[in-house]
Length: 407
Ligand SMILES: Cc1cc2nc3c(=O)[nH]c(=O)nc-3n(C[C@H](O)[C@H](O)[C@H](O)COP(=O)(O)O)c2cc1C
Image (cartoon, rainbow, N blue to C red; front, side):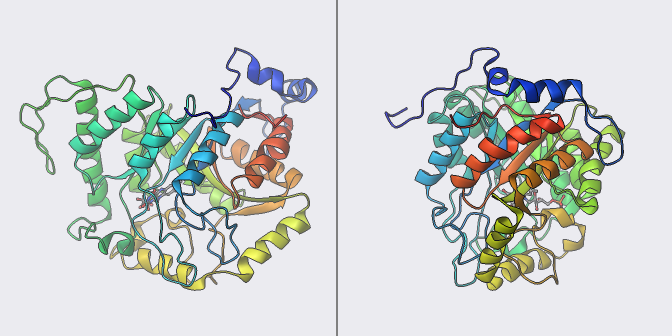
């Protein structure tokens, strides 16, 4: 690490507990709150992470998005180091293949996920880094070896976000769309793909004969120091099954509105039905915080005043041109077809620090979530608001994190 690196975290046992206001903690532990369905909640610690803004304009589709989110590697590195310093558990870099039409040139510059993850692992000490891969793009041997190498760079800290890809436009323009694979077939390929990757990571000799892949007396080293954590973010029934059968964590777009909460709960139920009582569920949540509800609303309005409608319609068209788009879960598409274009992705939440703490607690408690991954407009100021104001209030609702406020 260079001299600009942040000081290492205090990792002594108990450091996290010392940073929480003891009165708040005592209340959280001894006075379980009631959730919206009147059930008692006991305090629990969740995993927290950030969805890295690896493309220009981050996740705000607007001419008024914070200019600081330029999608450059330097910026992503700075954000990841700050997140590590604050105590976030993980950072996830998405896999993006295409920029958007429209005047803001949204995501015209977007970093590649695996090489970005390699550099982030080298530059950090503790935080987990999830790289994203489209299973239909890379053969299993390629990713198995890349991830084993990532594990040498950041031992035990690498994870993999497995996606099938659902936007025709995102992938076809660079020759990565395979029309022979329909929605469910892409997941069938995924089942085979990940089972072969796991064999590369564990077995000495790999003789594999499947519908899509084959090996011949294969071998691979190095083996990862521990099995990399696997996540999937599909929201179709087939996607849930893939996650339950192959992954450690299922991600879903989350919000405290009933339609989102039911999907969040459904993810865990689907896993239980498939016998996966240990599958963790994480919510991906967009927050627009401010000191008051009115100021937060004004921020949303400012973003919407500059909305790049062409970019949003382009994203929607990308999913619509997938010939079996109807099978893709609504929560996987980020925007709703037919709705007026808005700068923020579906399910965003704006509000004061108190409002957002209460709403986040509802999602975690009522959605039975094990973790959350945050999207914010400005990953400096807004993450400070999260760590200094929102997460400390979360503890009052019995939801604890390992994140510590700024001194
Ligand atoms: C938290 C989260 C992260 C995602 N990351 C990516 C990504 O990096 N690249 C991508 O093409 N799709 C990404 N997606 C989209 C879905 O995973 C993708 O469309 C999925 O393959 C379709 O799933 P489904 O048909 O089961 O709904 C993400 C979705 C969510 C909710």
